[in-house]
Image 1 (cartoon, rainbow, N blue to C red):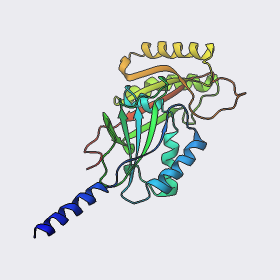
Image 2 (tube, rainbow, N blue to C red):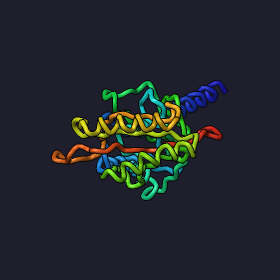
Image 3 (cartoon, rainbow, N blue to C red):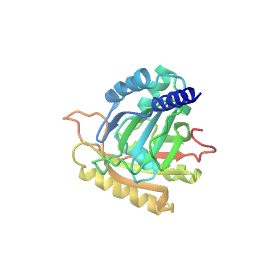
Image 4 (cartoon, rainbow, N blue to C red):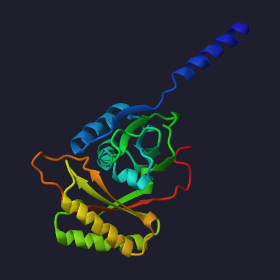
Length: 244
């Protein structure tokens, strides 16, 4: 009986030791645009997180609140999620967003972003915030994304305070993207945005305005962006634990 008991204990110890753990698939500190995101999605959905109970974690390494961390991410995480959804049958419930202050990247204006494959039963990476991707909504103003002319810029700038007043839970993020060096025009536009939002009467904790390196793709001959990008970000309060 003593031998059987010892053998059972050894078997249990071995089972515990081979329990699958969280796998860091890729970490980006500077840039991962759409081409990079396609390759990443193949790794996540086709290699590391293939089982129905596996989930994907996107961990944003930042001391800033989650809306700003999302907006300054080093990776095109929304594009990754769209591929996981369309090509690998993922649902938003199987993608978690985490924010951690223990993995800050080397570029202060860019949020280092990590992609993890989490098998069923494995512990999540350390974080100070955890939400399902379905609880996060990011809207661009205008909806087509980067602003290309003065008319679209003025319309978006007028719309932003209206959207924030209509939704007290939302936060406005205004980023002056640049490729190599922010232009004087962009800096002037950001001062204009800051002034407009201050005059709107909105509390300063309802919006953030700053310069940010462009983390997508661009050509060496592409001119620097002239207009800021405006976003309305809402992170819904979780009604229950993100993962039991």
